[in-house]
Structures are given as structure tokens and as C-alpha cells.
Length: 296
Image (cartoon, rainbow, N blue to C red; front, side):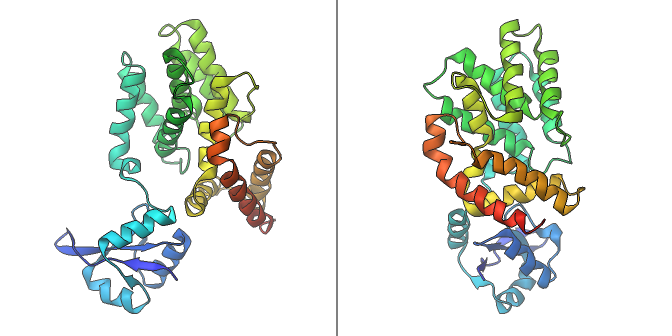
């Protein structure tokens, strides 16, 4: 067991709080908290906030006492740490500032899209995913595209999952939305390019010559190469989005998607994507495929 707790030093609600984490997996953390009758409402993305009166009980149950600094370092090393910028209270401001830089003449459109990305039924295809894709584009596009192409990539990221109902029509509907909202604001050629880029995220199979398509698709798939605990959190979020399906049906559909990715000569289409993410992504995908086979 790798459950860690720091001293109760964080004031709130008239008492002091500790942070309870696992440096191995969220599953382990949730099971420990449940066994100790800690409310699920105390969970905050990567840790539980627990009042000081629970401290001795949790230590006795096996939580290892560490300093606040040690706890944070262990959480970061595990890959489970949620950076501050990905927390709900930060996301809107960060994303709206990015939108203002991309399309400063249309602040209302940015706010409307952000509302769509904030819908309650999204567990993975949410604002964190949007910001992650935009940040991956920053990495992959640097020095590779000119300013108008960068704008097209960024807008394609904003629109690529703007419509998300968990159906095969999502990308098409998102591409249509991009055309409807951007027509008359950008050139017809730019609108068409953005719509085409959005559609590519359905198959993640851009042509060799499609530089922008390869950048966008690689950015969308960056999550596959996260450290194992973070990848498992991503997979759990996907399962939550399809929790209405029987487990065997979910597994069969997911196996089909992941097997298609693994069967490719390269998961990533850009040189930088292959260098940064290919090996880690394959390890994660194969590990999840083995798990999903047990669900059938």
C-alpha cells in the first residue's frame, strides 16, 4: 500500500485539514478512503481533504506520515498530480485568454464553446482535454506552421469535440458547427480547412502530406502516452462516459478502437509525436487491451 498523508495544517471550515493521496493509483486511494468511511465528497481530483480529527485514525490504518513537500513530490512522480491549471477554478480563465489570442474579435463565441465543453456528461472530453490538446499543438506546431495555419489548428481544437454525445456523429456535427459559426468571420478557405481538420479527429488517419492534420491528430492522441497512473485515470473517464452500456459491449467497442491504433505502423503521424509519445502509448494501449479482454 502506498497511501500518504501530510500533517493537518490547512485551515478551512473552522478546523485544519490534511491531504490523503496514493502514489500508486486512484483505485487504491478510493478503496482506502471507503474502508475508512471518508466521504467521496472529500475527494478533489487527486487527493482527499480530511479533517485533523481523522488524522490518527488514518495513520493507524496504514497511511504513511510525510511532509507536505514529500507528499506533493510523490504525487508528481506518480503521474497522478493534477496541475493547478487543470483545476476547475482555473480552466475558464486560461481557456478564455487562449481564445482571445486566437480569435479576439469573437469573445461571445469563445464563451459559448466553453459552455459546451463544460457540460456535465463529459468526464474525459471536457475542458481539461481541450487545454491539453491546445498545449500539445503548441509543442508540435512550433516552427512548423505559419500564423494563419496555427490559428486554424487552434480553432479546430476548440471545435473538434464541441458537440459530444458519445456517438459516431459527433465529429460531423462539430465540423458543421464550425462552418456555421465561422462563416463570414474567416475566409471560406480557412473555414473549410478547419472543418476538414475537425473531421479528421474521427479517424485519426491524415494523409502523409497533411501537415496540419497530423499535428491535430497527434495532439488529440497525446493522452495515450501519459504515465501509467494518468493513463488509467483517462481510461476510467472514458468508461464513465459509456457507463450506460453493458461492460462487455463497452469493452468490445473500446478493443476495436485501441486495436486499430496498435495495428498502425505508427500511432503518431509527426516526427515529434513519434519521438515523444510512441513507445509509452503502445505500452499503455497494450496494457488496457489485456484488461478489456477480461471484461468480455
